[in-house]
Length: 435
Image 1 (cartoon, helix red, strand yellow):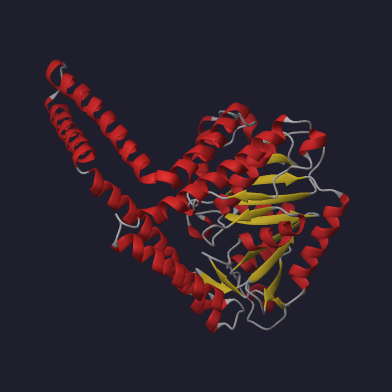
Image 2 (tube, rainbow, N blue to C red):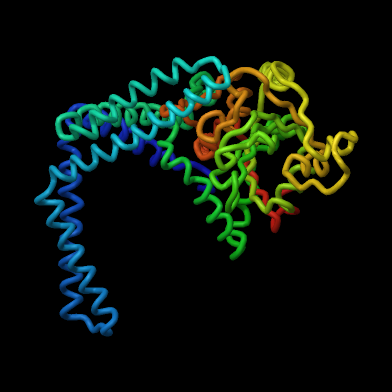
């Protein structure tokens, strides 16, 4: 996950495999699934034979002998299920896929009520998405064997588009820069949300390991050329709290722009919902605060821009912070104005105001009026800014997570011809090396 360059041959093989597998899945996905089940069953059978041999011919303690017998029984049981209950497994896979879509339909319904009650435009579209996903999920759950074809088509199309995206990345990496600049991908297919949401957790564990045993120190700061980045995207990693599954911010001209539920008095539903507020803070002071006070790790990607792209970015930031917004003051700022009693205020907004010169803008209209962790979340700022220069991640499921953004930016950084030119990991222990 913190490699320094992409393996070109692996990229080509992956893209071709995805496209071919996607086509076959659309044509006869049920047969492919059946063969895969038989393959897994065969592997389990070999493991069972291996366990059987070691059980009777290997020397084991009594405790380990009981564990070996249990493992052998389980291996044999799973092998029999794979070969003699294949249709049951196929139906179970389809039902699981249906339940996954059903959860998304509930999410669309929740968002519909959120939009409707707050008079946000787009509620009818969300209700339409709810109806469509609900019907599809019920078809898969109630009649899994007959309607497996719907799952085949969805999975097949996803694999084909993912393969095309990676094939484009391969071409950009292998053909001359003059030509590749015209081909660079403007659209990226994201990972399924269930995979992407766990990327920050895996990344946090990896960095923890690197810090503890001091290996791969060179991966904390990697640059592709001598140019300084014009804009940065910051990915937060934390062990718990609201940033446990990542948090995304943008830094331009030494100012951090972050979207979240910074008004603690508006929070509800376990802090998952609140008024949408944009935080603007001084870069270096904010990074110090996050590392020292919040005990987070940061992965910062630096991006090089053209002069035209800089103008677009500046306009996007101005529109984001000045249109449909009002000034918001955290409790400590209100106390400084004499509107609250003096005292210690330790909510995050007050701390950013005090330690990083934080200023806040509350959004009063539009789809980002309300923050919701599974829809209008922290990625909104990055989307609003980068969509202006054609950096788009397709949200196939209506959700773009911090993990999706990390995956997109890290893949772009690994490609030598992309304009993502730096990747720096900030931790409390390695801060001096990284700055």
